[in-house]
Each structure stands twice: as structure tokens, then as C-alpha cells.
Image 1: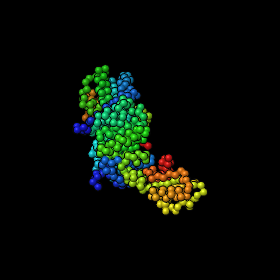
Image 2: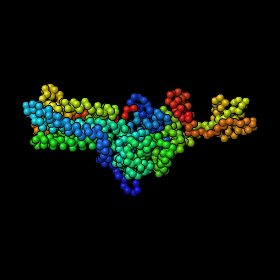
Image 3: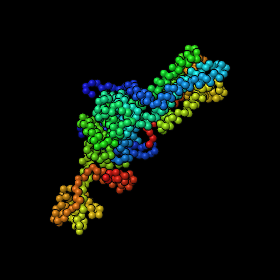
Image 4: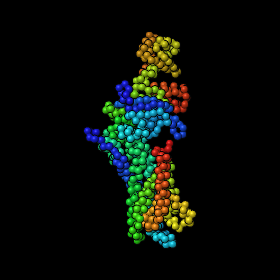
Length: 326
Length: 261
């Protein structure tokens, strides 16, 4: 349980999940989450996020490998784990004909150390909706109700499966603030998301899942640092790629061209940018559409998708690129 | 937690919270409400009408001895079995069962807690119907009341478990209107509800004795008439317990907690 003085609240080793039809959704993954940390599982639809989280929640037994939550097997030692965890499923889970208050009261009766239902609803700004039937709530309001109920017993560990899907920008920010505040109060949070921004802003560490495997893991900065930075610009009239200073002198590790648009990759952004700009200044040319940017999680994500597609060329990877190319 | 001791939940408190919500839902589902509350009050009247025409005396029966168990049977089928198939399927399709399973409730608590309002309705209705039949059909007080009570309780547990089994094989809330029909029809025709088995040919009667609700009917009728021998009582008990055990096994083995994808 102890590693580097931190308690590992969630430990996953060699985890596999196989469905009845033989589909292997989770193909041997390892990670651990320390107490008081927000850990994000990032990936596209079908990457295995929900399949993984359900194993952590103890909804199903793994086909292989091991899960420990708070030192217990969440599937076989349910009674030891459940009073200390809070769960928000990816969707639904409440009878549509009950009101918000009735739903909260029902859950409060099933949760050890539950807060008063009204207080729980106020926490997510739903107190005014107390007498509204669940079926009349908007998608975003339903997500907030789900979050309120996951928090009802002040759990030590919180599992949030796509907590902000369907929320507007303001609702998303509110949820981020709430989740950050919970982490600051010592709650351990495992969340899944397909929003890169969410993983980057909210998580202390993350893992990028791709086709049931972890493609990259670390802090957002570490995952990003593994990727090169990027410089793009339009080649001036009358100039060719060969007219630029030698690429290794610029510190460029890769390049590409799209018509007259040149794309350089570098791990030494300052050196490459300086030498490129000095060259342009000396040559007396203007670099139109100049764009200099550090690696972002988005690029890391696209890079991973690209590598994976080069390896497997699957349809899923193409979908991933389409979704995130924007 | 503001310094107070956190309230620790118990199986009873959890099931009570769930049952309360389920009772609210029961009250808001008009179709279920009508079928569960009124049909079992109306059907016995038609059974009473046909029973008047039958040669009951030849089989050693009275109208009351036919109508009273039948009325309780209708209550078990409509208020408990059929209503619960619909409730289990609806909760599963709305992912309520899955969500409940992420919490402290155990699987058996989820099913029992959800079933409680329907089972309580069936129990109250059965007692009311029994009292009504005794008064209106001028019946004597039950001579072996423990058998009738045992039959009723076994019937409640069996119908709850069979409802969960049926729900396992029901894909949508719409099909939940249809999937309970086979057991309901077979029980009404063959378990001594519409027609006493005593009027059936021997071979057919002994087959019908193996149907799930037959032993329940036998025990309840025997409880009122006092006409059951020890071996008949034992046979009925074994049959009822066997069906209940089978249903519980089937639920553990096949019950679906979330919709198919």
C-alpha cells in the first residue's frame, strides 16, 4: 500500500476484461492512484474507459489481473469497499417518475453517513429542482443530480464516468471546481473523459487508453513533454525547403510540407524558433501564417492515435483522428 | 459530517428506503395500479358465477372453497407476479438496477426491496379477499389456518422470484406486457383457479399438480376446508419449495442487471 510515502488507494495490475461475445475491451493495463489525487482515464469511445471503471467500481469481475480499491477487491469484498466509494455512471440510473428530492431521499437511505438530501442538492445547484420529476430534467441537470448522489456519503474514493458530458461550458467549469475542491479536501478521484481540456486542467495524472491498452501515462506535463513542439509557417515566394538553414542546425527532428505550408517538429523550441526567425530577418522575408507552439496534450493524443494507426490501421483510429483533429 | 456519528446503513434500512421509492413509483404507474388493485377483485366474481354451474358437491367442494383460493391466486398473479415483471424490467432499462449495484445494497436487497410494495399489496389484498369470501359466501372459519398462511407466504416468495426470472428473459418494458402471460394463463387454467383439478381427468390433474401455483392453491384451500392428508400437504409443500428454489437459482444464474447492448 505504501510507495514513496503515498498510500495507493487504487491499484490495477495486468487488468483484462472480456465480454460474453469474446470482445476483449481491456487488454492488460497497470496503473495506481495515490490518495488525494485526480487521475483521468482519457480516450475515445470504445477505448475501454468505461469497461475499466466498471471493474474498479466492482460491477464485474475481471477476466484477468487484479484490482484493489482501498486495499480490497471491489467485486468480492463489496461490503468493505462500497461504504467508502461514490460512483457516477456514464448515464442514467434514476427512475424517471421520481422527483429529484425523492431520488435523493432514496439514495440517502442507502448510503452510510449520508448528508441531508437538500444539502447534497444545494451543493450542485439543484435545490430549486427538488420537486421536479427526473424525466423533466435536462441532460446537464441529470449529470449534476448523479454527481450530488455520488457525493452523498462524502466518499474517500470517487469514480466519475464522463462527469461533464452534456454539460454547457458553465456547468463544466462548476463541476471542475467542485471536483478540485474535493481533491483538496483529500478525496481521491478517478474520472474518465474524452475532453482533452478536462484531463489537462483537472487531473494530477492521467493515462491515455487506446484499444484497451495504456498508450501513455504520467502527469499532463510528462505526457506532453514526450511529444515534440511544433512550428508552422508559409514558405515565402521564390523560396524552397532547401533554402532554409540545415534542419539539424535548427534543432528540428521532423518536418513535413502541405503545399507551401511547412511544418517543423522540435524538442528545442526556443533554439529552433530563434534560428528560424534570425534566418528570416537576415533574408528579409516575412513568414506568413507563422505559428509556434509547445506540445499540448492534444498533440500527444493525436500523436498516439497516429502511431497506433500506422501500426494497426484500424477504423477506430481514423475515428479518433477525425474527432480530435478539430 | 460535522462531528456527528455517521448513520451506518443496515440491510433493513436500505431495503426500506428502496421500498419507499418503489411504492411511490407504483402509485404513479396507472396501468399497473389498475391491473394490480382491481383485476383481482373482479375476476373472483366470474369464477363464482361459473362455479355455481359446476358439479362441485360431487367432488366434495363448495363454491367458497373454489373461489377463495382462486381470488388469492389472482392477487398473486396480477398484483405480485405481473406487476413485478414490469417493475424489474423498467428499472433495469433505466439503468436503475445498475446504479443501485454501485452502492451498498446487495443484489438480494435490491430485488427484495423493489419487490416489497408489490408483495405487501398482494398480502393485504389476499387477506381482504379471504375475509370478503368468508362473509359473502358464508364460509366456516378455516380449520387449518397455518396451512393457508404457509401457502400464501410461499406464493408471495415464489411469485416474486418467478417475476425476476421472467424479467431476465424480457428485453423491453413493452414486452413485459406479454412475457408474464404464459405463466398467468397456465396458472389460471391448470392450477385450480378457474376450474378445480378435482373435475379434471386423473392424468391431467396429476400433471397439473406439478405447476408452480397448484401447491399454493392446494395449501390455501386445504387450510380452509381442512381436507388435506399429511401426504397431500407434504407433496404440496415439496412442490412449492422446489419451484421457489428453482426460481431463486434461476435468478442468481440468469438475472440481467443492465440492458443488452
